[in-house]
Length: 498
Ligand code: NDP
Image 1 (cartoon, rainbow, N blue to C red):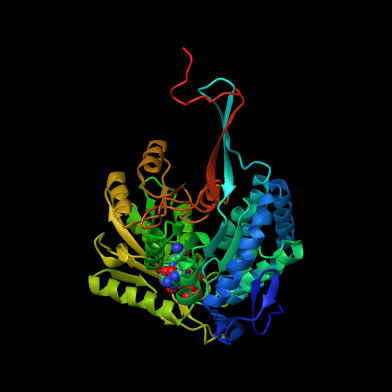
Image 2 (tube, helix red, strand yellow; image 1 turned 60 degrees about the vertical axis):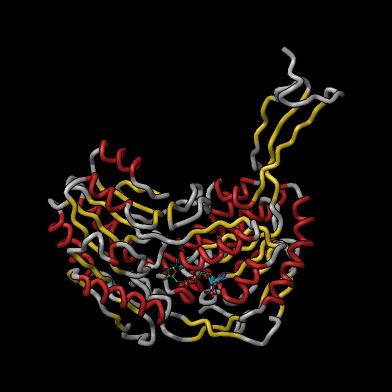
């Protein structure tokens, strides 16, 4: 169906190069357990080579006018569009998400290409009056230099485009370490950049583990920004090291996202929103719904409707268009999900559906988990507070909007939240008081659009955002420029004429 190289190689300085050491690991299709290719486990020498090439390339790239840099992104976006189906199939094979979602993820990358290409003709700074006569004042965005992006397996192409496209249009050079589980999208995107005519060294892809390649990137003084998406633990570790080096670091680290269902909600719509946010991508999204905070007056009806619809979910290999829920990424993740389900049972939550691993009849070596629903979940339970990253949802009953918001906000993450209600007063109170970086009204917790900032509060991030215009703040430095054309020395704050 689709061609994949038997072994991937790194992309450094515009060349496809063998890694420093002859060490590879298998890339496994999570739907079947079959090896689809092998990926290098590169070393810090490969990172050094990439940094050398990026440093050289960045100086030239930054001098190319931004609208011309943007032309390159327009070409990349068009090529992604032409190859959308090919990319989506490969994405389903390496990550497992169902084809419909894989197409959506590739589309997100295409949207990001065109959006950021537009920024090539903006990259707005500010002009402002000077306090002195015959003096001009403005601020401009300057590229940071060489930037490192470290991406996870759950969105192997979209997240990379959120980070690399703004970095490239702003005049930086990029070193990208994709997750070892999902390197194929990185390989394909690098090929597109190469064919689109990106100058050598502006994008470098180094495959390998977080502990080798990731840590070498964090440690390298010439990489001036690290933009990371992944677990809270790894993010904290990276932030600590970058902090000591005064290196700019942008972190996006997941969530414990809730859908609030009020007593006046359109329950059919709420059920659809919950199913899509909780079981889409098998719950392996940082914005996945893993808590439903439901008003006591509609809890019973909502529960019944959810169970009825959950029974209709088809689980299996995402290449089959009839499948709605694909596999879990790997055995370790499957075990983590099951551990949380056992914890929920021990804590006294009532299991209403799922709660077990299962095998697809045709692809019985894949990693599958049954969509799982708990009720009678207390807000203090671990399953109500910790990120599970799988198809597991907890129902928590409340009496009022105030209580729902309090429960939503008391977890250590703050990425996404949603409320279903027809009451405009409740809508506006909720969008003000929910403490997450993203709030949805009458929609589930997933569905971010690329032209708005993506990220969150508390344990979700460190104040930066991916996507939207905010992404440019990660990959640029503000430079304030004062031009004095008075012909004399004018001292700010002192030589002001009355
Ligand atoms: P990690 O945070 O370990 O991995 C994310 C990325 O960071 C990968 O590219 C990984 O490389 C890299 N990495 C790992 N360790 C280091 C390090 N010391 N220095 C630099 N880079 C590093 O997440 P996992 O894939 O292990 O998933 C574990 C949990 O994290 C999930 O169950 C989920 O809860 C959460 N998660 C959240 C995501 C989100 O969207 N916010 C995405 C993915 C996971 P490699 O894997 O190749 O070794």
